[in-house]
Picture 1: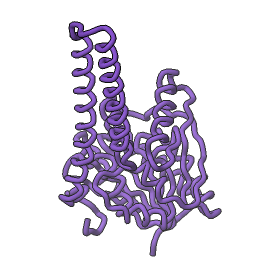
Picture 2 (picture 1 turned 180 degrees about the vertical axis):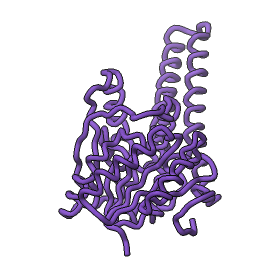
Picture 3 (picture 1 turned 45 degrees about the vertical axis):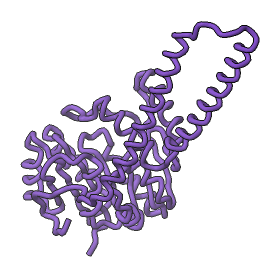
Length: 311
């Protein structure tokens, strides 16, 4: 018999908080539902997180876990958690307690009213003005580029109905951008807000570089507009070149031949070379994604689990 609720908890080097996360989730969920499970996914931790999860599983029969052979990333961890979850509703929540477990009962209540996705949106309360501005700019640009709607402050913390989970699992692409996938599947959705919460312990594994790469993944995963932009920009450059040649022709006709402009030549060569390299990189990114898709490698490899496979 399927449990009423599954909670998926991706973990990477969360030894300082994973026990507290289990206690907090258990305390909140037990008040509203008896039949539930906690699915911890260890994403190649090196700090003893897996050992602590094994202890939790031995002490609590509701704890299930999946351990990767190495670090495959949070996208793979969420995918593994969704595959392992059997609940009629599934909540995805971080182990660091920045996603408040006390919101889970409210999510379940709204799900029972008919919503397939109950999405938690983090407010920008307490953020630095520069960070808030950067985030708003990012989402404004993203929503002009991608084919799905992304909302500032909305991440992976959400409840999904069983049919929403099945829809996400049916999307088998290797290069996954879950924010976009959750938006793409649609279904009835409602958003609830929560304020910023500090990590209960440990350090975030998200660096500026990883955030930048995540943003690029978002742009490239749901549209081909960067490629279309290269066509537009190429057309603009050709038109500008034609106008420049026309202007030079008229000038020669009126004033005769002058010494060619060295600065103009260097600027033109450098500018066009930069544009070409930029769009070669964009094309290379798309080709690289096709390359990985055609390999059809698994999203992750499992080294230990108390959840029946196959994976």
